[in-house]
Length: 125
Image (cartoon, rainbow, N blue to C red):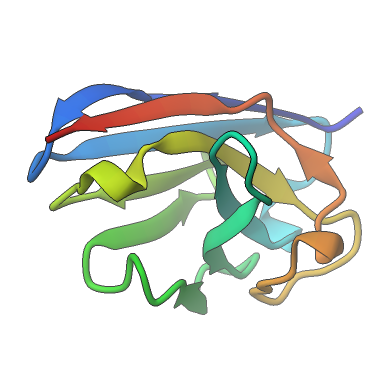
């Protein structure tokens, strides 16, 4: 049973930083893509960032490019999202996700099969 547990969310002022973590268990972590998505009430889940199983390929949504950085530590079965220069529009519940078969970095949420419970990020103006 694959489990993903996010942590690190909270309340921060605009311009501040947060680092989200997602701890994975239940299978060989390093083989599979990891992604971060976010969602606000009444809106669809939005892609934020993705990283390949090996960690050598990443991709970001235009809205976060240059401010957010995704990384992974396969020895610790953990993926991170470093969020800098936060804006009020970054306020959302952030989810990590992984695939049961895919190793390459991937954008579509439909390619992800396992999801964490989410962590709230609130950016005040």
